[in-house]
Length: 327
Image (tube, rainbow, N blue to C red):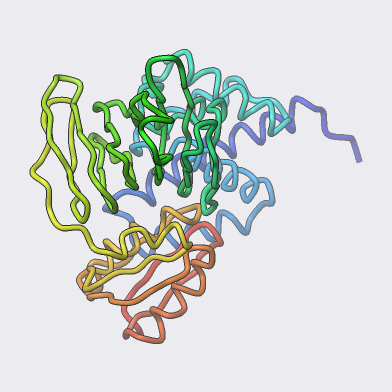
């Protein structure tokens, strides 16, 4: 039997990556149904290279922070032009492409270059605790990244992706410089406090657990947020503060605590802590969820759903899970 030439192997993987990109975009669309699920499984079972390509798609999706479907597809299709047999080379090449803005994705909030080259970052499902030079403490949530920029004028934390909990060091006489968390939408200035900042798709969410913060948008709009309050802000405006649940910091203890949350919203939160696609059928989307779930064991959280509601949890692959009506 003749040996397979290197370029032939490379070509087969290129084709598999292209196919996997199309599969991923299809399955993330609203039109996808059971027939698509079955067809994907058949495709995955037909060749180990297909499974390899699907895993690469999922890993890239995580690094892109779930970019919009059409951008993810375009990224993968162009990435195959620079493909090599090395996984490290593939991902490095994609990071460089994104960093140069070739695909128009570099400005997106979870671009790989932001996570890989940030001062501190976490993988999907992981958290990380940091103590800064001034004694302030940070906890990074899942898939998060920050840069630390302390100078003579200010103590600046730049949130590049995800979410961070900040507990500032006490004593203004010891630390007279302002402590600021910056996002693409503006700045959050701490006033001796414990607070969380989370990047959403086009806005930033702030939740204050102690004392207060001052929010300034990039356009200059300002608002105060006190202990027990939360608000969101865009580049132009800051919302009025609303009440904050005392359990909204449960993620720092690797817990997700919800009260009367729709199932689709619950799965969207849970999906932050696992790789791949996690979704539910429209017929069960409005089931109301109340409870406490460990985010370091999302499979167990899904198992709890199946025991508490008339739903089935279908693992098509490890990276693709659908919650549907119990048959």
